[in-house]
Image: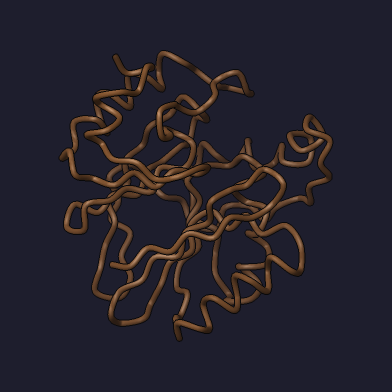
Length: 211
C-alpha cells in the first residue's frame, strides 16, 4: 500500500490517502477546511488517478472531520467511524468555539466501524483497533503486511493524545497504547493525526508517557 499525508486546517491535521495497485483508495480524517484545501485534496487524488471508495475517521474531533461533507459529496461516500464517536462529532461547532474557530456541522456516521473489523479496498485491507481514551470511539487502522498504522490522536512522536477534552480518560489511553499498539512489531510506522511519523521501536524507547 501507498500512504500519502496532506496537512490541513488551522489545527494542522494530517489527512491520509491510502491506495494500492488497483488505484482504489481510502481517505482517512479529511481535515480540509476551505475551498483551497478541498481543491488540494481533489487535485492530489486526480493526479494519482485514484478512485476513493471509503471515507474513514479515526475519531470525531472537529479538526479530523472538517472535510467529511466535502469528501462525502464529491465521491458519494458514507462517513465511517466508531459509533462512540457520533456524540463527539455532533459537538464539532462547540469544540471549535473553544479554540475560537467557526466549524460547520458535520454529517452523521453512515457506516459504523466495529473493533476488529477489516477495512477492505482494492486488493488490500486494514485492521481496526479500538483504543479509547483520547475520545471514546478512537480507532487505529493497522496494516500488518505493510507495517504501518494510522492512529489519529492516540499516540504521537514523543507524546500521546490529550485527555483533558470531553470524555477523555488518561489511564484508559495509556493502557490501550501499551496493550494494543506498542506490542506490535518494532518496525511498524506510526502515522499520527498531527506532526511527523514515528515507529513503535522509537516510542517504546523514548516516549516519556510509556516508560
